[in-house]
Image (tube, rainbow, N blue to C red):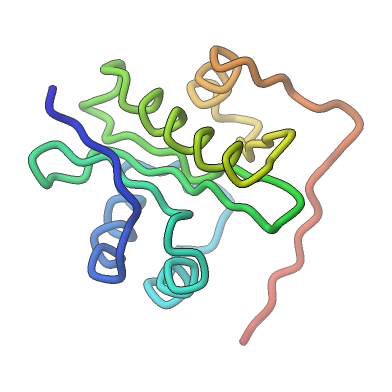
Length: 141
């Protein structure tokens, strides 16, 4: 396996959005737009991490840092490449980035029905936080 990780650039955005349509857990979420992902890359060029095997996108994770809290989301691995350690590589890179920025705690957003995703996070030492729920408000802009 010759998988490498690196931050996404603006040229990667269309491929990432297409990748998430195939490999991402997309239940109950609006479709990601290239414009929104592009804004993420422009605002924080190191947040969106890619795993590539000979320039083929095989995995992603967003390691967001707002200066106070660290958030991990959009961990996705190409279905036919799952079980090869790609998610672990991405999470190692994400954790290195966030701890290096000063994070003292990491959180991950995982859909309730995503049992595979929950198993990955559990294996990495994450536990479900009780008594908290995520509240969202769509904004049309």
